[in-house]
Length: 146
Image (cartoon, rainbow, N blue to C red; front, side, top):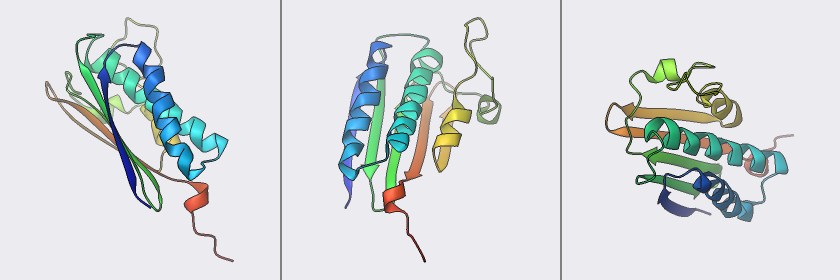
């Protein structure tokens, strides 16, 4: 089975919960475990928050784009913004790195995203935006060999 949804919404903090719940609702059709559902909702929250705060500097007049595809193996998830981008992606992926040191934040959440997803690819160019592509194989879709 392959199923896809695409979502576009304003870059305001209230929409972080909307994005999390929408992706969570979409993937429930493949019956993820509660842990898997929580992990996926957490990575959506982290990536959307990054777009709002770091990508768009809290500009509410911008858009965030999410695509989520259910595959035979699990899910593919992309979260994209057209914001300021990341100059050094490898530095940004370090624990506790933040582009907003004046805010009380503990990094950009890439460590959390990497811990919860099977693959994470961050594509970013200065002044062109950032896309975070992720995949996760769900327990129900994993092969069991005995």
